[in-house]
Amino acid sequence: MKFTRTKIADVIIIEPKVHGDERGYFVETYRKDRLEDFLGFGVDFCQDNESKSKRGVLRGLHYQLPPFAQTKLVRVITGSVLDVAVDIRKGSPTFGQHVAVELNETNKRQLFVPRGFAHGFVVLEDDTIFAYKVDSYYSPECDRGIAFDDSMINIDWQVPYDRLILSEKDKVQPRLSETDDLFTYGVDYYA
Image (cartoon, rainbow, N blue to C red):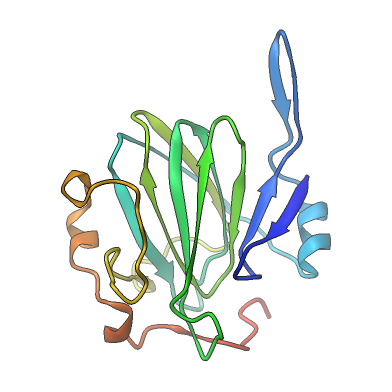
């Protein structure tokens, strides 16, 4: 596995080694020991989630507050998405900035999204299956979101605005400047 820090160092692209031949392929999608060696701390994933969506579906930008803050390890099984992580740690030198990475069934890339980041993705192909691990269970009381079209964050979702398909919840999320439900840079949310 190859681990690459993005322009926001805590967000990591993981590229597993794909072993392919005429029969198909084999890929090791997760190695706890290698990930933790790279990170320098432990992550205890407890739940796997999967969604199937058509082109234009945008899910996000979501996060959970402590004590149910979540780390996510995301990937695409079939299809393609533009995956986005936004730094929502007050005081961070990259606060409000984002990383956007295409994840698809061909490149097999994964994105490690740590606690302190909002996460979302837009589907670029019909019948895309998106899968991810989280290290804390879903908590409706701690569930929060940021507006996908916040001009401060300025994400190019690569799908025309009038073709985006959002949940009612995601249509009314607050802008980053309108919420105090954020994280604080320098706090160890893994302790």
